[in-house]
Image 1: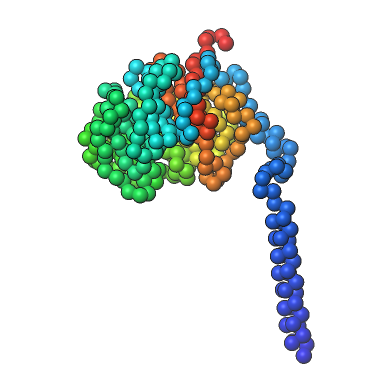
Image 2: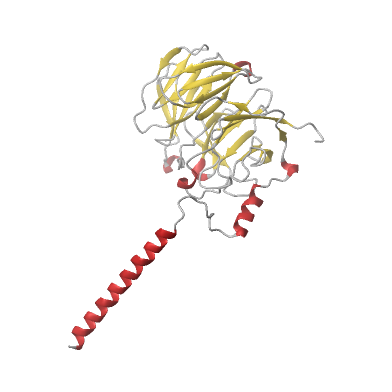
Length: 347
């Protein structure tokens, strides 16, 4: 009898615990604020620390914005490039916008789909990543070629052009593709291979940028590792630089830098999302200074250090550099382009 009573008593205890857990869950749901009006629930000290992270020492800011932002005219801007003669190209919606160096609209080129990346060749041809493939346009925006599809999982995020090939970053397959001038696929770069010392790319979100540097190496953002990798055109991994840190010299969060570009002196301009920052590094990856922090980018009050990709799926910045060294920053959330130039000595 005692054994039977003990079993019944233990069963009732389990039932009571289950009911208590369900009740607690119901209370939690009822108290949950889906609007965010009641705040984050975090302490004032946490909010203060975020404000400290966003504050950039004025002595580190080497650039200034001489004029108002340029409106792209798109509902959703996605990518930015500087072409011949300093023209500014912006990809958004289902089109490309072309602006003069002074920001005056020159042309709107309609596309067959939504563009995610673009590059302008020295001869003026326009290369655009549209959906699962690359399309080539003439200088006047007329269709010239359409390359083969890379499959439904392809997410083309960056294009770089050199005399030795055209390189396309595919965030969907986490690989860089090398094409010849005719659009024939001739190689893959960055597929993980421990035997060849190729670490592979970690791409938590669709931000995967690349550029050809002055030293003849292909530089590729490896955002999940918070760094920039260097490869030969044949796919040999050479080295990498960058570190994960909320400090001004590092790249913070789950997946930064989201974009970068090469400066005329061989250095780099990089952009981060979450804690929005645009910074300058020398050709060896050494920190030089800041183009703009959250305040200069109009992002005060929008600071969010993301530790998981799910926390920072939207937003982001794209960067491009003009031949005269001016830095163009595309804010894809507000659909504006900010132009920054170096401060005069002593300012």
